[in-house]
Length: 145
Image 1 (cartoon, rainbow, N blue to C red):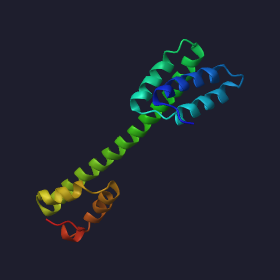
Image 2 (image 1 turned 180 degrees about the vertical axis):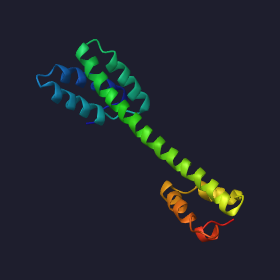
Image 3 (image 1 turned 90 degrees about the vertical axis):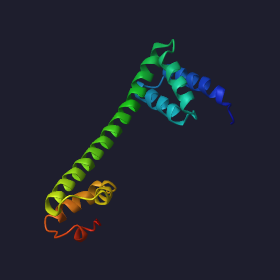
Image 4 (image 1 turned 45 degrees about the horizontal axis):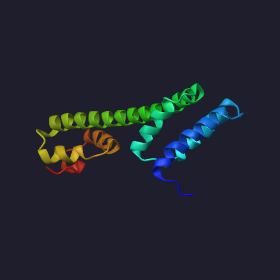
């Protein structure tokens, strides 16, 4: 079934109203609304308009269900962002620690070596940090100055 992009928003809103008022238990209504939200083909602008319209629906049941569902998606996004931030922070801390240690062991690091370190994953930086304790030169660690 082909539906015009303009009509999708209207159909999504109507689906939510009907689902909130259906005789299913609250948990099943929630899951059904989640399915509508997940599979409604909207672009970013339409998605914002859809969320706004659902959050301001005259039916209090629709508004309550939407706040619960949309807050869940926002929280998921926050958690993913937090995990990504922690990973980036760990990588940066390893890079700085390794630069300090290598600078102390082998003298000032060239921009090239610092660039090589900046391009490495946290796992590789961790491996280099451990290997640097026994290394005799930057070349031994695979770093070219």
